[in-house]
Amino acid sequence: GNSVTQMEGPVTLSEEAFLTINCTYTATGYPSLFWYVQYPGEGLQLLLKATKADDKGSNKGFEATYRKETTSFHLEKGSVQVSDSAVYFCALIGPQGGSEKLVFGKGTKLTVNP
Amino acid sequence: GAGVSQTPSNKVTEKGKYVELRCDPISGHTALYWYRQSLGQGPEFLIYFQGTGAADDSGLPNDRFFAVRPEGSVSTLKIQRTERGDSAVYLCASSYIGGDTQYFGPGTRLTVL
Image 1 (cartoon, rainbow over the protein chains, first blue to last red):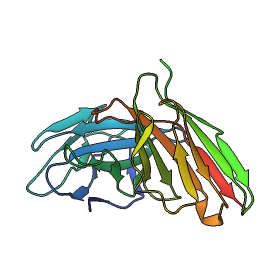
Image 2 (image 1 turned 60 degrees about the vertical axis):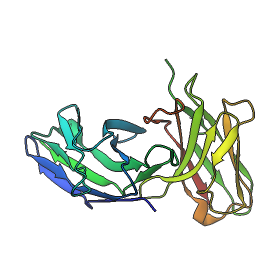
Image 3 (image 1 turned 90 degrees about the vertical axis):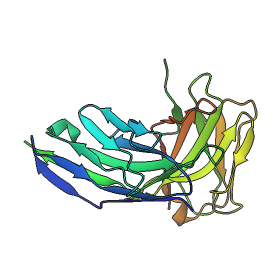
């Protein structure tokens, strides 16, 4: 079945550091890929998405590129802020015609210190 | 507009009791999903509704779990004979049919003593 493996945390960075959170997936066909974020005390929010190979999703300074050849969707940000402290989840939805359910990774907790 | 709402926000119950968790989706969203998130884990799919019918219930762990959506809007997740292992945050999400973005509610934290 479909699965997502993401870099385990926790990750602790200083403000303005570069962030990478690795995510790889296993799926039949071409899934849609997502990064969701869960800020302390809040619900899951969509951060960015990409629906086909080589697409780049971006939002709030975060980027991720859908790499079919390496089945990866790594999350990056050039300069993190304290307000980016949260748990980040990589997820996929199976290709069109399959189930609409999201399959999530285990999450990576990011702490950014001033 | 209003987002997905879930009630109660917290539920503490005793082993063996019956519980109901409610989800109000975003108005106009015909697709509704339930997920369960255990501590330190990502959300795991439970069930997916298109309108009133369950299109995929493959994630329900056993027959103690049941969900309904009788009018195609509000949904209730029902758990019978609760067990300590059912303790988790239960998340609801909604979307347009065919839309790939799911909008999540704040969750219900269920604790089974």
